[in-house]
Amino acid sequence: MFDENPFTFGNLALDEAFIDREAELEALLGDLRSGQDVLLVAPRRYGKSSLALRAVRAALEEDILVASCDLMRTPTKQRFAAALAKTIHDDLTSSVDQARDRAAGLFRGLRIRPTIELDPDDGDLSFSFRASRAGADLDATIERLLGLPGRIAAERNRRVAIVFDEFQEVVGLDPKLPNLMRSVFQGQPHVAHVYLGSKRHAMQSIFNDRNEPFWRNARQMQLGRLPEDALAEHIRDRFRATERDADDEAVWRILAITDGHPYATQELAFFAWGHVPLGHAAHESDVEAGLIDVLNAEHNNLSRLWDGCTRNERVVLLALRGGPLSLFSEEVRERTGLPAATFVQRAVKALVRDDTVEQLPDKRYQLAEPFLAEWLDRDRSTRMEH
Ligand SMILES: Nc1ncnc2c1ncn2[C@@H]1O[C@H](COP(=O)(O)OP(=O)(O)O)[C@@H](O)[C@H]1O
Ligand SMILES: [Mg+2]
Image (tube, rainbow, N blue to C red; front, top):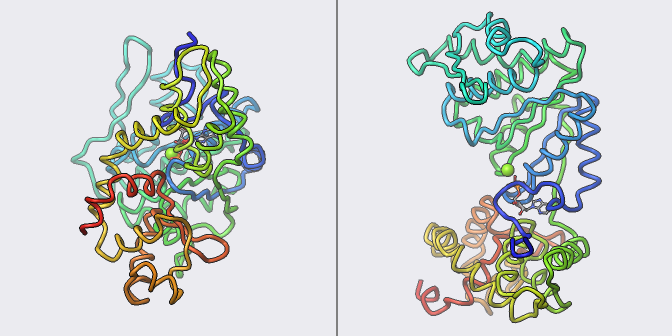
C-alpha cells in the first residue's frame, strides 16, 4: 500500500490530489448557484477540468443540476448531439422514471430522434444520431437540445448549469455553431454556462468577435500556476503518507524546475518518488534522476514540438533556454544571435499562441512549455545543428 505512487498526472486531480484553488473554486461555485456565465481560459494541463469537476461536485451537493460536455470528445456534430442528449438525460432529469421512457419523453420534440441503446449490465443508456441525417435537421436537433437545460430549469424550478470543456473545438464542428448557441443561450438567462478553453487565441476569436461577441456577460476567470508553498507542503505530505520523506533541497529543486506548473510538478514528483525506497528521504539527486525519466517520457512530445517550429522560432527557444529575456533589446539580440526584430516578432507571436512561450508582467518572455529548457540543455549537440 505504501508502495503506490501518490502523485498523479494526466487524470483529473481529485480529492486529496487536488490542492489550492480555493478562491477560484468558491467563485465558480457561486456562478453555478446564481446562473452566471463563466469563461475560463488557461493553457492545457493547468487544472481547468479538475477545478470544474470539483465545483460541479460541490454544486450537486446543493441540488444544482449540472450537465457537461467535453468537445474534445465530440469530433462531429452527430457526436456532439449525442453527448448533449446523454448528459441532459443522465444529469438533468430525475432517475425516478424508467430510464427509457424518460428518454423517449425528453427527446420527443427533436427533429431527429436519437437511437437509444440500453447496456444490459449497468442500465446505462447510450444515444446516437445517424450520420446520414446531417444538414438542417441535425442543426434543428442541436438547437432543440441546447434549449432543453433552460426548459428543464423552468419546468422543474431547479438551478441548472452546463459546462463545455475544450470549447474552442466548437468552431471546428461548425463555424456557425457559436451563433446558434448564442441565440439559444440568450433565452436561458438563469442557466449558468461554463466555457473552458485551452487555446487562448481560438477562444478569444469566439468570445471577442467584433461583430457578435459570443457572450457579453460572461465572467472571465484566470487560472495561474499553483503557489509554491502549497505545492511544497503537498509534495512533503505525499512522501510522508507513503513512508518516505523529501528533504528541502529535493522539494525546492522540483519547484525550481516546474515553476508551479500543476501537471509538470505532479509528473516530476511522480518520477522522483520512484527513486526513493521505502523508509528513505528524497534528495536532490533523486529529483535529477526523476528528471531524466521525465525527459524520456516527454521526448516524443517535445521533439514533435521542436520539429514543428520554424528556424526563427527555434532560435528564440534556444535564446530563452537560460531564463526570461527582453527579446527586443539590442543587447540581447547581439548576445543570443536573434534575427531582426520583425522576424523575432513573428516567431514569438506563433510561440505564444501555442503556449510554448509566455510573456511576463514585466514584458520579458519566458519558456512556458514544461521541461523544454531541460530537454534543450540535455541534447544540445543535436539541437544546435538546426
Ligand atoms: N489543483 C490541482 N492540484 C494538484 N494538481 C493539479 C491541480 N490541477 C491540475 N493538477 C495536475 O494537472 C493535471 C492536469 O489537470 P487538468 O484538470 O486535466 O488540466 P486541464 O483541464 O487544464 O488540461 C492533473 O492530472 C494534475 O496532475
Ligand atoms: Mg481539461
